[in-house]
Length: 344
Ligand SMILES: Nc1ncnc2c1ncn2[C@@H]1O[C@H](COP(=O)(O)OP(=O)(O)O)[C@@H](O)[C@H]1O
Ligand SMILES: [Mg+2]
Image (cartoon, rainbow, N blue to C red; front, side):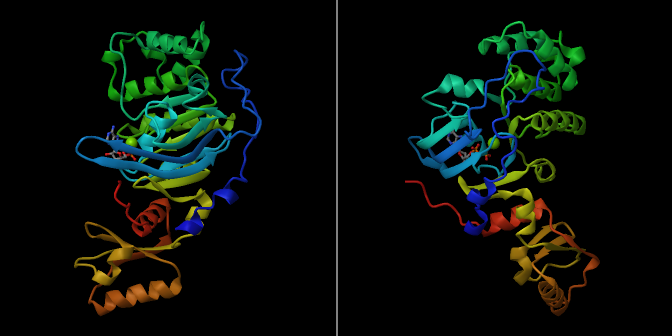
C-alpha cells in the first residue's frame, strides 16, 4: 500500500493558506490568527501504547501526516483502528507515547492552552452536565475559553443546529440526537479555526446528519479546517478532499479522495447468488445475504470472474457491472494491509 501513501504530493492541495476565515460569527471578535504556513494539524511520528498490568495495546504506530488549513480531511478505519486515540491526543486528553502533535504550530503538550483554543472537538461519547439548560451549558463552555458576552454567536449556533427552541431546555430532557447537537454547538462556541468531529453521525437520524453536514460544510467553505472520523463512507466520499485510512494504529492509505477512488480496483460486479461463492473469489468479494459484490481491475478480470462462476455452476442473477465506491476501496485496502505486529 505504500505507493498510495503519497503525502508529499497531497500536500500540494493547500486551500486558502494563511487566510483567516472572515464570516464565521461575522464581525464579532477576531478568530485566532492562522500562523503563516503552519499546518492546521501536524501529527509527527505519533505512537501510543496503552499499558495495564495484564497487557499492553499498541493503539497507534508511527502516524505521520499534516492537515493543511482549510482542508476537509477524513480519518477512516474500522473499530479499534485508533481514530479516537489520535483525536484524544490531539485534544490533550491522552498523552502520546512517541512523537509530537501540534495545532497551528502549537504543541498539544508544551503549549496546551493555545492548541486547545484553536480546536473545537465533538467527542464520540455523549458527555454533558445534566443540571444546566442548553444556553447555560454553552455560556459555561464559552467562559472556559475566556469568551464572554457570546449570546449572539450562541443564538446563531442554536439556529444553525436546529436547537433554537431548546435554549431553555434542561440538558437531561433532551433526546440523544438533540444532545449531540448541543455537543456540536459546545465545540464551536469559542469559534475555533480547526474543527474535529469523532463519529458525529453514529446512530443519529437523517435530519441531524443533513443539518450537521450543511453547517460543517459551510464552516469549511468559510475557511475552517475540518477533521472528521466516520463509519459512513458515503459521507466521507461526499465531503472530504483527502482521506487517511487507519488499520490497527497504522496509516495504510493517505491520498486525495479522487485519487483513492481512481487508484484501486475500479470495477465492481454485483449480482445475486443462491449457492456458495467459489472459494477462489472470496478474497475479492463481499457477500451480504444473497447479494455478492466482486471487485475487478479491468475487463479481462471481469471475464475471468464470470468464467470462474460458470465453471463452479453458479448462475448470477441481476448482474450489474459498475464503478467502485469508497466502501469498495476501503475494503480492498483493509484486506490488503498487513496485520499489526504485537506490542512489546
Ligand atoms: N483507555 C484505553 N485503555 C486501553 N486500551 C484502549 C483505551 N482506549 C482505546 N484502547 C484500545 O486502543 C485501540 C484503539 O481504540 P480507539 O482509538 O478507540 O479506536 P477507534 O476510535 O478507531 O475505534 C483499541 O484496541 C482499543 O481497545
Ligand atoms: Mg472511536
